[in-house]
Length: 273
Image 1 (cartoon, rainbow, N blue to C red):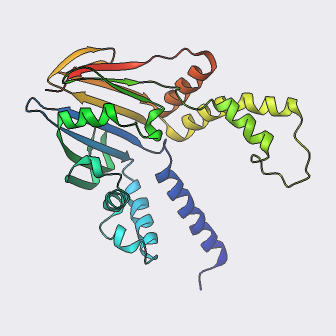
Image 2 (image 1 turned 45 degrees about the vertical axis):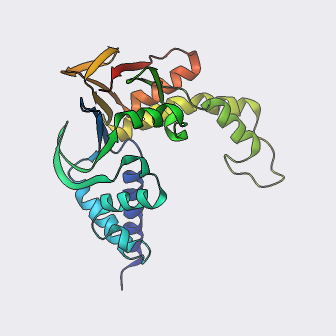
Image 3 (image 1 turned 120 degrees about the horizontal axis):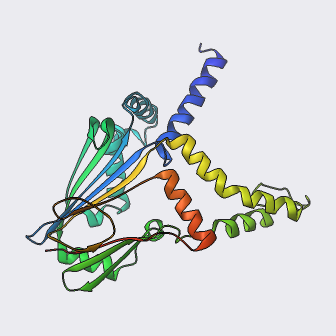
C-alpha cells in the first residue's frame, strides 16, 4: 500500500503540475499570422515550456487516462486533446478544416523547448476580414486586441494593454460583497482602511508574482503580409513585424493603463493581398 505521506506528495505534485501547465507565466506563447499574395491566410500557435515539461505533460496525460471520459481525448497526447476539445466546443470552427498539431521537444524562438504547435490554413483573407470586423471579438481577447478595416483588403490590428475591467474596483467589490475573502453571514465587514491597503497591494503583488513564476516567459506575436502600411512594432524581416513582451511586463502595462491611462498601444496596418 502506498504510504499516505507519499500519496499526499504525489497529489501535491499533480496539482502543481496542472497549475503550471494551465497558468500564463509557466510558458511562452508564439503566434504567427501570415497573409499571402494569393489572398489566403494561415496561422501558427506555439505554446512552449522548458524541455523538462515533457515529463510533467506525460504525467498529466497518464493521470487523465485514469478517467474514462478523458481517456479518448488524451490518447495521442495533451496537445491533440486540446485540438479535439476545441473542435467539440466549436472554438476551432473559424480555423478552417486544415489543422495540424505537433507535440514534443522542438526548436522555438528560444531554442529547444517542449511545445504544442497548432498550424491552421484559415482560407480566404477576405473572409477573415469579414469575420474580424463584423463579428464581436471574443471577450477573452477583447482586453488586448482591436481589429478594423480602414480600406478594402486592408486590416489594422492594435494591441491595447489595460482595456479590461478595472482591477482595483473589481477587488473592492469582491471584498465588499464578502466573496473575497469568503465570509460567513453575520461576520463583520473588514475595516475600510484595511481594505484600501489590501487594494493598493494587489497590482504590485501580481507583477511580482509574474516575475517570480514567469522568469522571462514571453508573449510573442509575428505578422507577415504582402505589404506593411504603417506600424510601431519591430520589423524582423521582409514585410514581417513583431511584438514581444514578458508576462510580467504585460501585467504591469495593464495595471499602469488602469492607474494612469498611460500605456503604449501597439499597432500594424497592412494589405492582406
